[in-house]
Image (cartoon, rainbow, N blue to C red; front, top):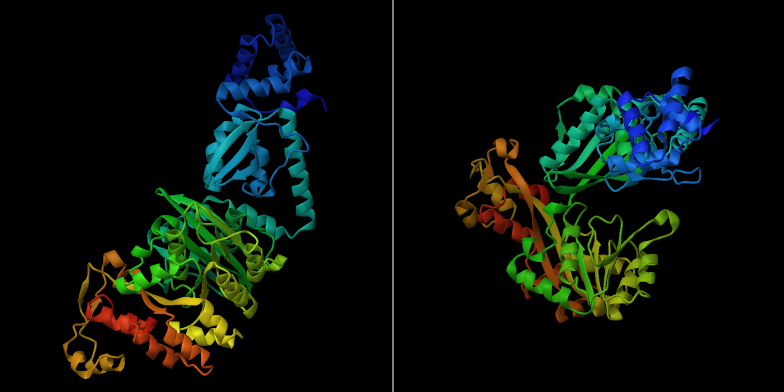
Length: 568
């Protein structure tokens, strides 16, 4: 096939005249050559640009260079050995790519880079933005290079249709339908605006539902229940496309990420897809970076405990452990502590699964156990990287704990997490993991336990007449105090979506490892009760005691205390 044959497009007369004018103005085609090509095109019934190329009066490269200069767009060489990212190609349905002559070839953050060879395609760029939800950066390439890549993709698509299940192709096409795109975009946007932390999309035998976790509590989204059931495969396919996942893979779990910028806020979404009996179950964790200040002073830690925590974080060595269940705000505390010591003279390394927030100035490592990159393996490597401060996302096993302790004993500050009910039981957990008591006493500086509780809505707060004295006594108030304490709750209003709560706050207990606690640990028969009793002599206040104090101050409901802080 000749070079000129690749430019067979439905080009408007205005664009044809523009190209000819550029060639004539730059002296790249003479008047005589132009008239000759014009006569040939009239006689043969073809486009004059095709005639100019066929007669050899110009080249594709010259035309592409002129167009890129005229339209203020960059020029790109898409030779056969150029790298075209599959993630980019998957952003658009192949039918649209072939018809619009727009080739997606790269993804740079939230920008999709596309190539065109003819200005006519510029009219479809806005459609690309709508389909993908991304910014679009447009490049000019030559007719033949674009044709070659489009032909390759078309052949690849034909082979996939011949060998793969037809349902996969249908799901992909459905994923690009406007109603499905709008549903996904609106679902995510509304969740972000409502401060939702997690979105759950769940299939069942005869229905499907969406649930939202707001302020730690899950509720069903009743809006458009029929839509999600009738469009379930397309909605999941759309989310997979946004996260760069394989839309054809339905047998294995998949994890991905989506980045959004909404109203000036940078938001990341961690996407988890799990195959279940009736289809793929989706969970999206929303991480709003602008809502997190990374400041210990902003966490709500009582002043007396904050002084102790800052002292431990400022120390040149030792282990600071943050404990609590999943979703209790441990990451916020750890990042705030790291940010406090994040200076140009401090080398910080972190091992995380996953990396939740970006900390400029720290070396952050994503743990990938499927390829052998474990917490313990990362820690060993860290010790050869000359760090002052190390963060270990979680002490999951004895090996990781022992390396962390070794790091602390050799002059490093180590921050990490454990899943325990309170600070005193953390000591028992370490012993049960097989850590020698003398290593615990030599390395551990401080333990912070925490929970997240819902704040009472300030707009509709009022007395809670339903709380009895018996209930107050059962959760820890004295008989005398239960008669006097004024308990409040939120009645529910528009501002709090009728929940009575708006936002969350953390409740902390901070336990410094004193010499007396070290003596108890070394005795070999320590209990969490004995450790807690000793810690109280040094000012330790438990989570439950903090919670009761918040009830006294009108900052916590009894309902929320029972839901989060009562030990079961």
